[in-house]
Image: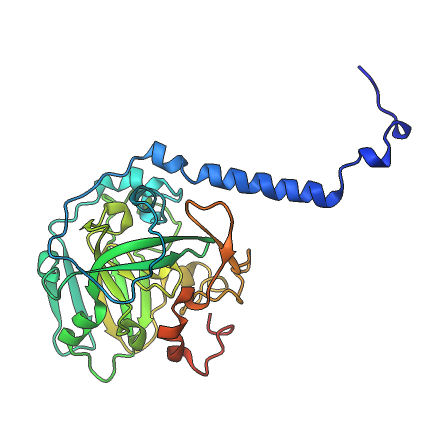
Length: 312
């Protein structure tokens, strides 16, 4: 074995620091790209029944859709595990019939909706929305659902209804990770009532023209495309109209990291990473994150005059 002495190494033999760092970045990108499709092999995504009568909806992006296998195989749903492929592997325990959604609180017409009745509240639309995760990845998903505003209209909120709280299923028998203390169960989210009434806000019951898979929040979930994905509560069982802002699951878990509004704002970093760029699932290079996830034209007026660094 040859022992290399300091004098044996010439300056020209040393890899420049910039080249080494770029190589590290390149290899990190390769690793991330290679990891992205791994979930597909470990948990093939099963297609569900078609949703008949779905019509094209407003506000859809013309960006390329993320493949169904990625949408159904790579997601966050902590009730079924913390790994990205865990929900697809474990959500088979979720039973979506019978299922009811209670509408209550500061409303004139409180009632309990059967899920199949909810499907008939309004015509189903396909809306192709961007989804931006707080962790830095994103997708383009063709959701099927109807505007939350339609359910709000039917409930007739009172003047005291300033916020809408969404409570999700709490059943450790069906959702095994609710036996852990990852979060304070059940999962709770909330919107200001003007956000809930915005025409972009969707109650989704499907994707890709099919019934919503369990791992994506079956049988009904919230979709708020200008906010980070964790705001879109899955497997909803209760919608409450309240006077004060709900104390959401992630605010209880980490209030310094997850604020109530959680709007996609590339100028406000998460305490542990930058939000300025994102990686679209299936792509190699990162792209710049857009203000309000690209929906500023539609929603920026909701926050006029607000300090979006303070109200994050």
